[in-house]
Image: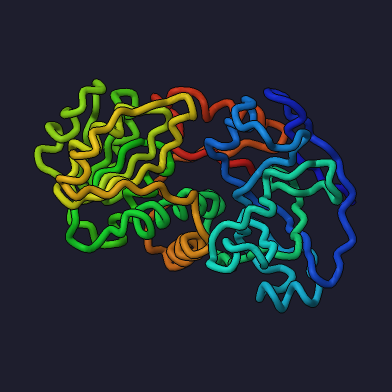
Length: 354
């Protein structure tokens, strides 16, 4: 039997390779992939916007599937058995670096960002099968979780990282989330889980249909921003907020608006990637005199991913109402390209079911 894997051969070119299934040893395993979510970094890889990664590269860093083969040492280390349904953390731990020691994201290797020429070639979740290397972290997923809900685990993990770990949202606080993409929505849902007194979802006019879902998803208020004027967000909300989570890409004006919207002692989580060419002028006295905190978070950690999987298993959040679309493996390029199109009436989340 052979596996099929989506390989980024060059910018804007994805090939579907056939690869022999590896022989599993004592410390590794093999995953039969059920679904893999798509995210903005896949689009940046596809467009050549993240230099320094190896090409050709096996894509897919949000895999869910069933354990198809497993060595004895791996079974003990990971706490799983053949046939278990699992979420696989994208980070592959070396076990010795400083990040591994504190539970952070190891920089050794990551699924979805390894050369497809590196044996056994199955290093991404955009495939029928994915190699499970020593140092992997697997988390059991309940059998009754729908595939489309399971695929949302990574955005939800981002939400737990950005709202919980970075934003330190406490019960009774007011939280504004900028950005109507999957991670913006996930941050709203996590803020609700953590007991925020009010959750405000902020988008652009083109996000109207997405923001209209707020009532179904337990989000209190929505705000539409029509310009980059710094005071507009504060004026639209009508009162200061305790935490702003900015998930917007390349929007420097959103940062200035977030600072204006914060109450004294507020926290701004800068989660949206703005690009190395973007610059922002800030008056340091504004930050110090108002006792503001600006935090740049991780994408996710093992802790936040585990929190997301536990929430999905427990049914703590109703993800079945999130509009989503599935693509087959042969249409990976189409699915990734869809990430870069304005979301007027399209799904919030995209996934690949090989």
